Image (cartoon, rainbow, N blue to C red; front, side, top):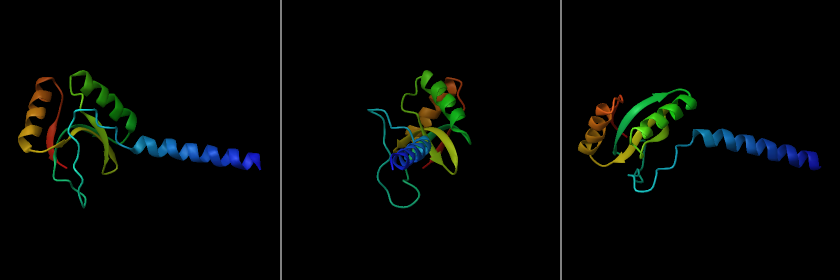
Length: 114
């Protein structure tokens, strides 16, 4: 009986760890957040720094982006990829300002509507 409980707990922990890796990072305090929305798109704008199929590469890019001063950058799961972006920007002008600053810092980036 105890063995069955231990096995169930191990399986539950493994599943939780797997799904935790697919969740986007929490948005740091003071940063823009995606507004509640219906459907597939919030209509907000984002400054995208890049994406990858693997989470490890996305984490490496996120660290690089944050070292350059973009503390609001997060990893989000989109279209089966891990995307590093500043999300929840309410205008294309705000997203463009982030992209211009990123390019000055030597980071590739582009504006995208969420």
